[in-house]
Image 1 (tube, rainbow, N blue to C red):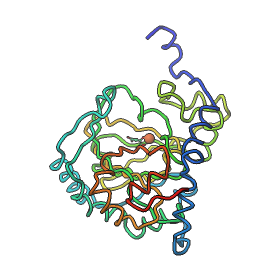
Image 2: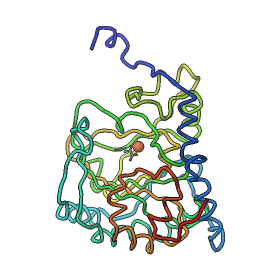
Image 3: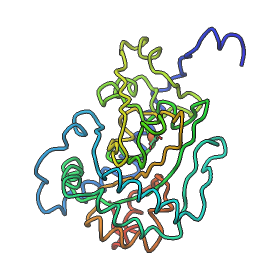
Image 4: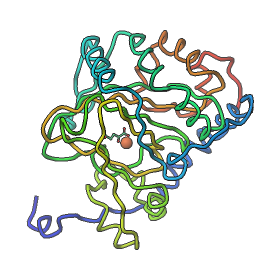
Length: 301
Ligand SMILES: O=C(O)CCC(=O)C(=O)O
Ligand SMILES: [Fe+2]
């Protein structure tokens, strides 16, 4: 670290709008994820009633999915069933991913998370059924420096994918949470080319770049109870993990994608193949591969 970096506490990232546009295009158009969603919608019986609420308007929302007691027993079940707990990326030495022989023991928890009310919300924003594409359980320890997902970013992936990040213990217990800005403000940072930039250009504070582009970021840093979750569009709203300061944060993260079949049928398939446990919130290059994931007859999109 040189002296200049002390004088510039929050540097401005290098921006590349064409890289941003290309990353957006890679999934939705080239990767045919738009066509996949349209295919899933075409089979939907009727447009889901209701609306997506704050999720639809702002791109994120806090939902209560389990009671604190249920969250505690889900955490205990995860810890008891984990065959390994280790850092998924060497440079992130403060977070471990739990891996499991089989995730069927979590079906009951997932059923509670995807209650009729939540299913309705997801179907309203997708216009179709949905399935669990990825399931990740992790734990984050207090650390000094924020890296990668603890710096402002959008996740690479289709425009219309959702994450449900459920906290298995309370912010009160460890000090950790996730910060968000809304869809409208996130779009302004996308237009100037911050979104999907290289990892090394991610920043812990958006104020300085915001000032340059005439946006005063309204950062929300909610405190969650155990069993509460953020449901959000990770490729559309800027977010960053906020490190715990005094305890370990355990989180269960589901990635949802549009589906032509009900999630419980898809679960049967992906629990047997191990896909949702293995996919680690990444996406096949072409959405046509999702037919194979769900073991449905493959067709061109
Ligand atoms: O760990 C967090 O709070 C943020 C995680 C994140 O960036 C994500 O799940 O996409
Ligand atoms: Fe993320």
